[in-house]
Length: 264
Image 1 (tube, one colour):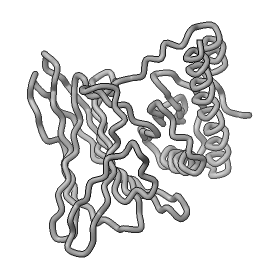
Image 2 (image 1 turned 60 degrees about the vertical axis):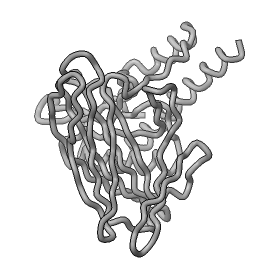
Image 3 (image 1 turned 45 degrees about the vertical axis):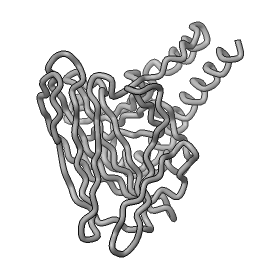
């Protein structure tokens, strides 16, 4: 294995020594992310907004993503709109808007993420159009269209009135074409193996020495993988395969410790 693991082995040892507290990260308590949809002339209008529920002003960064997935081969394409905003206490404001053409043969995931200045994820909202795998924990809504009905699935696996926990979320923060290529390869494998992790997985790229870039995979503010990125496609594919294995084992160990504590 050629990837450098940063604190991952130590992390596994810590899990064996410390009790798992069973506390999941809760979003939308300080800042609530919202997505509004409307249909017009066969197109779907998407508006992302944020509501500052805290007692003080918040400087925020947001990412509104539209992800199209081909259910046949799991290929994905992703379009992001990003920006910054300052919200006063009690203020709600629209952040970004886009219009998409919905192909009924594609699964479309709409994801809004809202961060503070320290890049802590405060608000999150996800909606899925044309999801063939909507589960019993899914609230199904129908957008009326002139030509067809568009199935909308909204996750409602919540921990309380103010918070919601979402699974299987990947966040991209890359800066170069090799970084984006790695994210696409990793995302394809993440979907193919149906990992569906309970924590947000962030793929982030940072400038390193000699004009190289360092790629990190971060879960719950912990760097589980880091390596110097090379532009060769063979390197990127192999790095993605090894990274998927590490992330899978991370979640597997996390689930094992949780189940062990629950039995006690």
